[in-house]
Image (cartoon, rainbow, N blue to C red; front, top):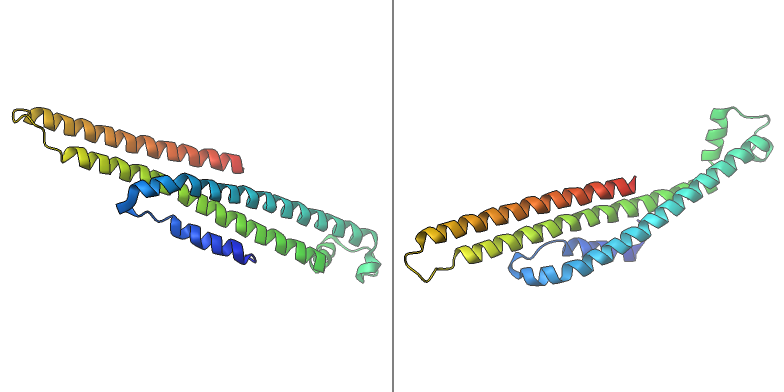
Amino acid sequence: MNNPMLEEKIAVWAEQVKIEKNNLEHECQIHPGLYLEIGLSVVEAQYQHHQAKTDFERVESELLSAVKLTPSVFGLEKAPTADLTIATVRLQPTYQEAQQKYLEAELTYKTLAHLQESMNHRKAMLRDLVTLFIHSYYSSQELSAPSSRLSKNADKDQAFDAAMMDIRKNRMASRLEDRMEEIRED
């Protein structure tokens, strides 16, 4: 990437993907804003990628036409073959410049898309850590009645089952979001 500011932002975001498990409340509070910031950057990078691709394809088609119509301008004496036409186009500075811009835009977009995917994993992990924290908190509480040993075990089982159900739901939702994102990208 040739954008130092964006590279710096990506490095900062990559650090923020890490979860400080002893400060879950803070992590849960900053996650939506961080996710939004990265998401907006992904959308902008996707737009730039599509724009660069369109420009690259336009330059390529214009050069192909020009080589076929006026081969003498490109140092060719007669109508070139298809392979020679493609080779001539690829050697042109405008083609190489457009191709470089396209590749840089693609790299930026894919890097940010992977960062966004990491944020999706972060969201799932935060959800799971909070669930485990809550489960641990409630399972360590003592009941006031000494004769409620059976009910305490039943409550633990129910809490565990609920926590496991939440984890399964979160994983399923995360997979569904991932699949929907893949479909949108295609």
